Length: 118
Image (cartoon, rainbow, N blue to C red):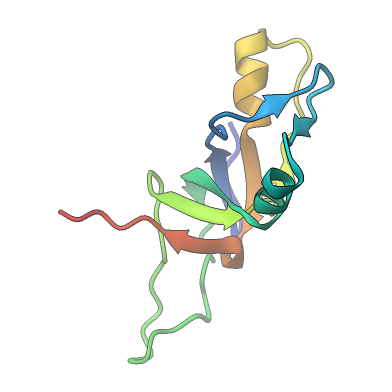
């Protein structure tokens, strides 16, 4: 397992419901309207790990610096943000699928954090 450094986070992407994928792993849009929606859409993810310098320098109106999210939070990121992890072909297929969903993103790639009503 990796640990995020500096201004980076490790997130696990949520699967897109109803998407069609070709045998080569390319996501297929059914219509032009679907394709445009997918291109402008954000991607939901679960925060796995947060680097120690995330959001350093970002302050609220009172001058306080606080993290925007923490491990376990559900966030929205830009669809193509970040760097995918390399997948080890020697892993079992289910572990390869999990690895394909992991991404390393910059702290300012977090567009929104899910807020609970509790």
